[in-house]
Image 1 (cartoon, rainbow, N blue to C red):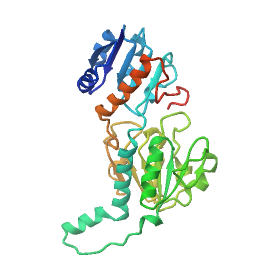
Image 2: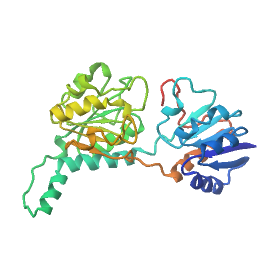
Image 3: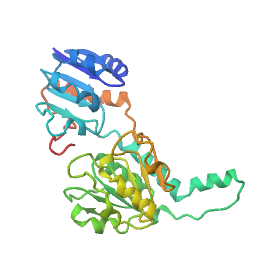
Image 4: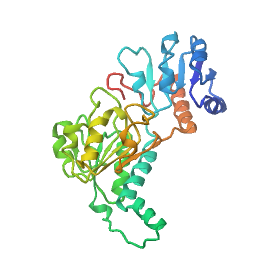
Amino acid sequence: MNKLLILSADAEQYFTLIKSADLPQLEIKSTGDVTLAKSLIADCNIVLGDPSLVADVLDSADRLEWVQSSWAGVDQLCKPGQRRDYILTTARGIFGFLISEYVTAYLFALERDLFRMRRNQLEQNWKPLAYRPASDIRLGIVGLGSIGRQLALTARHFGMRVTGLNRSGKPCEEVDRVYTADDIAGFLKNLDYVVLTLPATRDTHHFIRSDTLKLMKSSAVLINVGRGNSVNETDLVRALEEGLIGGAVLDVFESEPLATDSPLWTIPNAYITPHMAATTFPDEIAGIFTGNYKRFLHKQSLQHQVDFELGY
């Protein structure tokens, strides 16, 4: 008999969904409380949960074989010193459309100047505002995983010119050209929008900093929907205040929630959202878990496995 611990802020929903799947040879426990989880996990060999919570109970899981993350990002479970004697799978492949909605919503709001249009409406100011067609927009995507590739497809649907950057430089059919960090200057120099979809790893820490910001066009907009530590926020604040770049759309931050004294709250060309570009929907995560559990039962390779060294 396999024993599953659900450890999540949405534990009740997950319990209902997994229970209704009527999976064989599976006993289910669930909680959203870490302290209680430590007393429940000792004889559980499977965990489904939020990485920030699961990381706190790993040392109490004596029979652990597999953890299914409820999030796409699993950096809390890949930190140096964390145990790695189990299979870790992530919620890959379900956030691409949501991220694409967020990025294109802000991109077109800025391109069509909707924020100023709204102010004009409130002032009863009839003033058409100029804009350019999407086919004139150059979009660069840093990180060409499932999210980055879906975003590229969405952007190309509107006619944008899309390039990408990844660690290997391996070609990606969804973009016109792939760069590596060795040619970061060539990648950044002509872009109107730079979108980060990076995981949190040693290699991605402060990928955007003062020297990379100086390579961007003064009108370019940075959009971060990956992980907060890929941007040096001090350098970004300076770049925004000095007009080195045109703006920033930020959904993730080095420390969350964003401190109330952060200058990013009030910089006119910074747009802040509270890490909600792609919300986790339990029914989709439960579907991933159900499919993987059937593979687990038949001793098949699980989908969306994480390489602990790479962090994704």
